[in-house]
Length: 468
Image (cartoon, rainbow, N blue to C red; front, top):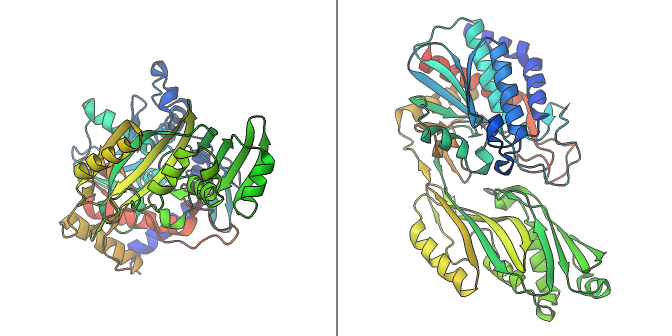
């Protein structure tokens, strides 16, 4: 091992406990982005908890002697170095809602068997902490930089990335090039486009209430419906079906379904509770006895998470299959209000697909309340900066994995010249958690400490290569 590599690893080991302590402090703040709780006077566009989280992060960086700037509560920055040209390092401080089914308290983080457990410990506060400690390393070693290093932290990545969109639209400047530390290693060269829809489906008169999920980009692990049906009839019809609870309700009967939550970009690892419930009602015959037209529509249209029921299942070699997710369901005045998260391949003809899907929805008297299309991201794997990152990743890990594509969306879509590179490395699964726990959008989110520290080493070598 080279002397500088040994010194870097010794420095990381010496700061391990401090990094863990900082991350756990940040996880204690439940920074779910809430634009509905906007407070302009307090510069809190995403509610009080995101405001508190950004204040905490900027204060921590300022205490280390770094220059910081609060961009009106939408995002914040900190700098090491005074060169006019910058290298950016972007992470987000907001988290998805905790959801259901946690074994550990989501905002009371613990360290166990080499893992940290808590909402946001992986996605994405761990990357922001890496940014802080990269700056500490540069400062402690008095590294002279031909480019300044700038840590950028957003507060609304999980809810559409309006944070940096607003910052840029308001005239904010970004570095000439930025690392987006919100994916996996090595380089992400393609991200599917985003096709987000808000629709209202005629429910049918025998559906009296329906709810599931909190955000469109997480697969709900629980759904509840109140039916105009006696508890006895429900028990009789649904007695042989698993994953269901049947509870008396003043209005009829409440049926609760249990699925397996996860990230909307990875439906293969999950089981959407909305579909569990819809399919159970159809298999039981209740959809024929009662007026549950909205359930029949959902079961057919979303019968797979790959667009088969919509009529546009597709894939390409660059980015893989289209995926779809019903992330949020609410009952409103006889309709099922559903928020859809659809991720389409880089080469998909999105405008033709949109026109066809609108026509399909119209045939079923489904109203489109809102539609937002995000363009996909793509960078040629042969680009010099990509090859540089790939080489450093190989040097540190010995892994020659090629650049990859993903369904998840990151700030690469928004921040000009931003490339998603890490900070997730393949990590062991905690054996103390049951199946379905530990993912970044699921219950009992975890971060493996040793691979997190290895990611720090990769990033530090990249910065020294590009800036020092």
